[in-house]
Image (cartoon, rainbow, N blue to C red; front, side):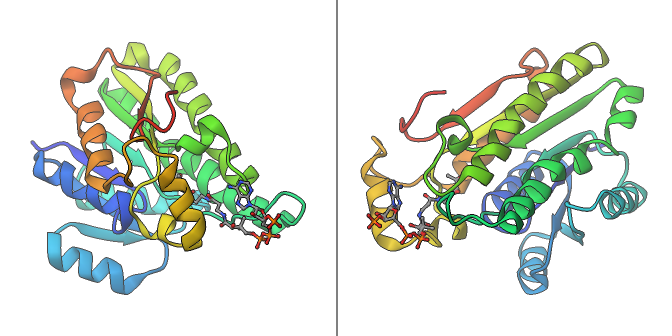
Length: 240
Ligand code: CAA
């Protein structure tokens, strides 16, 4: 029977590439999205991958959504916590709302996504938890106190989960993408983006497929001894 993978934020950006890569590896994939119905419908039409709409910031919505996926497709043994948002502002201008929205989605969202799936992984003695962190969780970033805090938090989450899951056949790892050519990075003012590209030794943005490749590697059954680690994929911008 095919393994079942859940990818949050899996219908756009890096998440869409992850969903497609796992499908190509033979997984049954469910992709979640928060609000963009049109993009999700287009993604399903293109790929045949089923999409589910819920807010990862809500524990109850996540729990109900995951129960629905498991009843439709089967027990989830691979979860990719990818959904994330930015609310960039220099710290002196950052509002409590901007702080809280990013914490709720990017950090609490990881808890809400993995927690309902974890008991089943423990029972079945197999699981793959992959959290999409960021180079900015490793190095910090101007105007991203909120985002960098969540992405650094992801690394603490996987290092801890790895220790709890190791004897139950569960691995938990993080991937730290550098700047990837997605809508999130394209939303950065052009002048700032050009300056960022100038700081990447590879001389270019990364491609979403280059992150999906890391996910497929960590998800595979023979990656079982890679646990609690972080893979950096950033064109040599920073080695973490
Ligand atoms: N480093 C140092 N200084 C910077 C800077 C940086 N990276 N970015 C902006 N500044 C400076 C500007 O030069 C400007 O300085 P002056 O006032 O002396 O001219 C000042 O900060 C900007 O001040 P403003 O009050 O005008 O800023 P603002 O309130 O309009 O905010 C901004 C602008 C939100 C910071 C905008 O510049 C921006 O979006 N910057 C990019 C932040 C960024 O890199 N985000 C990463 C997004 S991609 C991502 O998150 C994916 C991932 O995981 C990698």
